[in-house]
Amino acid sequence: MSIPNSDWYLGGTPGRAVFYTGFGCFAAASGGFLISTMMAKTEKIQKFSINSMMITAIAATAYLAMAFDQGKIINVSTGRIIFYARYIDWALTTPLLLYDLAQLAGVNKNLMRLCLFFDELMILLGLFGALSLKQAYLWGWFSLGCLAFFPVLYLLFFVYPKYTKPETTKTAYTVQSCVLGGLWLIYPIAWGLGTGGNVISVDAETIWFLLLDVLTKVAYSSMLLTIWREVLPFTDGNISGYPTEMRNQPNSIQDGNTGVSRRVYKPDVTTAF
Image 1 (cartoon, rainbow, N blue to C red):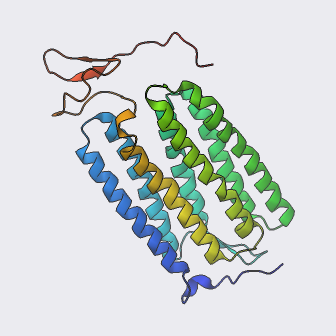
Image 2 (cartoon, rainbow, N blue to C red):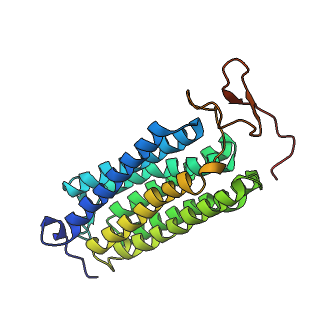
Image 3 (cartoon, rainbow, N blue to C red):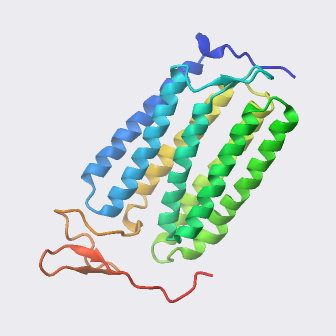
């Protein structure tokens, strides 16, 4: 088995530039989402904006660490560089992405926790695979990680949609879940060709992961806050100074003294299944 050059990051190749490019993209996106947070008129926009800012800020930190030649270890068996900072990034940001989808669909906390559990398990198994010194162990961990990925996809595509509202969130959820789920399916392919099989160089794998990270974090979150801005589910009402946006919305009332609209809880007697 040929081993890609593990000295690519020392200079003279695109590796370090890719990490700095990633840092710049995510840092700029974090600034944009911070502005969205500060300018939000309703708490629903503020909540999703904060979530998006946290996602991109964590990713920016991870990419800056990798650009500084940190957060990595060399697999002594293959000689390949393993950037564990990438796995820390995924372990912190993918639950936030799934939280967005859960909020958009309106699922209960039990299903949300179940999905987050399998997501974290999948990432942990991938890290164990990357650090394995024997190919049998590497592919064994990889296979287990793929198995942990199946419940996540099942929940996103077959369970969560049952909780969406046809007149508001159904279309938004369908598009967002297909975008996120479809892009996530490419990650195991990149991992298998790079970390797993040593078919592509560390450089090429880094570019693959950067493109996927930008699409799943920046593009995905931007779509949520722009295209689907009007159908995001209401939470606790309006931010001070913007009392009118929730008027005439389902499950909301307006306070006669303050003029501020608040959500009213109405139990749903129908079943989602």
